[in-house]
Image (tube, rainbow, N blue to C red; front, side, top):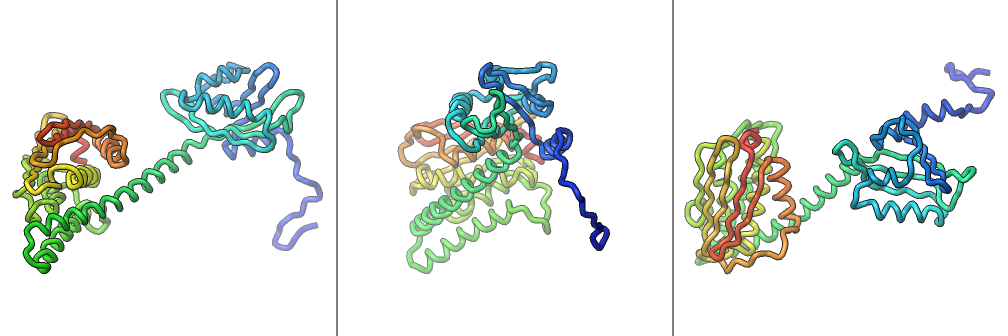
Length: 339
């Protein structure tokens, strides 16, 4: 019997044979495993062997053998979780990292606990490669943390700029004009580094970029008074501009909070020195409050700076906590700076 439009009704139920199930599992990226709970032997299908980086000819493996591939930071947790599956009923989903060919992969092991569905002492389950999802989650968390950090910094910057504007203002109107000028300078810096599809910028001078970024933090709203920048004609490409801006704003905000720019007589000198493969940028503060070396550099701002310099600009960052002021040395890859 046929339906209108050419659709056909089958008189029999779908046949889920082993080959059909294999095709469905492959299409879904599902890797199969079985675990003999008495002998601790684990049988893996071809996709599981590929996921773990094991040769198919290896045959049966043990839990201990697989454990050698689990990331050390996750190993104890995974051992405890798999032991618990024998006692706790219901579905389980254990996520962990494995090391394969100098790479780290995220794996989800799924099955039924409390021996549900066990057949002749053999437990069955699946592995899923969840690396892409985990990377997306890390990127989302980093973005959320960065947004939260930037909002906090905006309040800190606005407060500090208000204090700076009040130092030289004699009337409320003077303070309004001064503060407005500084906030507009920050706006210009934002426009300079904001990606724009309408106005593509191939490159800019590093010295000019630093001047625009730091203008709002100087006493008179332009660099040259408390903040001085010395840089030869070094080009910074559009791809590196945002990264450099993040780093400079982070350092400037910390200086406004705790360093030279928080004091009336504090000064900041920045000099850029090019070499064959590297560009060295020295951030030198003086005249601020007594320098206290922080207990740790694990705050989100510090993580953001380190990640930006190391991962995106192929360089390094070092801090010298001198009595007269902190000195920050940035070394960035010259080729990456120009991209």
